[in-house]
Length: 374
Image (tube, rainbow, N blue to C red; front, side, top):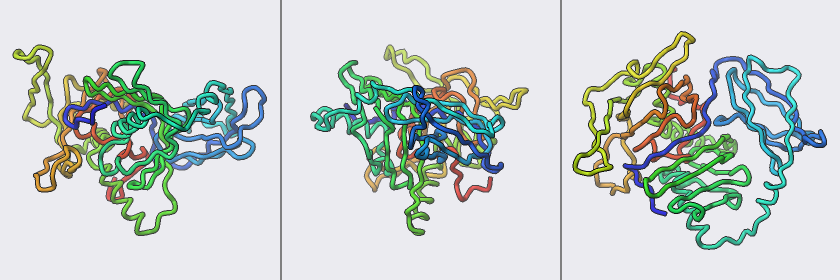
C-alpha cells in the first residue's frame, strides 16, 4: 500500500457524531444493568459509553452501572467481549429514573475470532503500518499514537484487489500521549482504496483522559489539544453553526469542478475568489434546526495556523502556507449541531488538510478550548 497523498486524499469521517449536548446544563444520571439474554444474570465489567465523548463507565461485578451525563441526545454503546453489542439512542428528556436493563446475546463467532495465533506473517505487519498511517494519521499527534491491543485487528488486502479492509474483534485501544487520552474505539469498518486515494472509516470512540499526568504535563497536553482543535472539522462546524466563521479564522469560497476537455475523465477546479459567509450555506427551518446546504464544493482556508511540516514532508527551511481543505456534501441538506457534530456521519466528504488529520488529532465532542469565550 502506498503512503497518503495529502493533496488529493479524500476521506469520509464516519464517527457517528449525532449527539446534541449543552454542557452548561444540569447533570443527569443514566443507570441500569447489563445482563445475559439467556440467563438474565448480570454481565460483570461490561463497557457502557457515550460515543465520541469522555463519558463512559464499566459495569460492576453484578453488571450494574451509573453514569452522570449532561442534558442532551446521545448514542450509547453497550459492549462486552463474547457478546453482540448494542447501540442505544438516549435522550435525557426521557430518562427512566428506575434505570434500564440491557440484554446482550452471546456471540460464539466473536469468541472464536479472538482465539488466534499471535504469530503474524510479514504481510500482516505491512498492512498494519498502512492502517496506522491512514487511520491514526501521519501528523505529529498521529505518529505518536500506539495500538495497545493490535492483535484484535483483522487486516484484509486479499478479498478485493487494491483495497485494504480492516475490522476488529474487540474494542481497539489506542494510546494518544500527545493529547492525553486513551481511545476505546469500536471500529465498525475501515476501507482504503489505493487507486483513487479514498479512505472510509466508521466507528464509535470513547475518550478516556489520562488522570496520571503531572500539572506541567497537563498544561502541555491542554495546549496540544487546543492546537489540534484549531482549524479542525469540529472547529469549522461550530463556527458555521454560530456564524463566527470569519472571527475564528476561516475563509469560505465556492469551488466548482468542471470536466477537463483536454483530459477525459479528469476535472478542472474553478475557485470563486469572493468569500461567502456562513449564512449563505445554512438554512434554519421552522423547527429551529440548522441545516448545512450548498452545491458543488466548499473551499476552506484556515488563516490562524499554518500547515504543519509533516503535511507535505517539507523541509524546515521551506515556507509553509495556510491550511486548505475542500468539503463536499453527500446530500442536499445536513443538520449540524452547536458542538460541531452533525446528524449523518457519512454526510460529508473532505479533502486536503482536514482529511490529512485523522484519529490521532481527534477530540471528543464535549471538548471546549480553554481560550474560548463562548
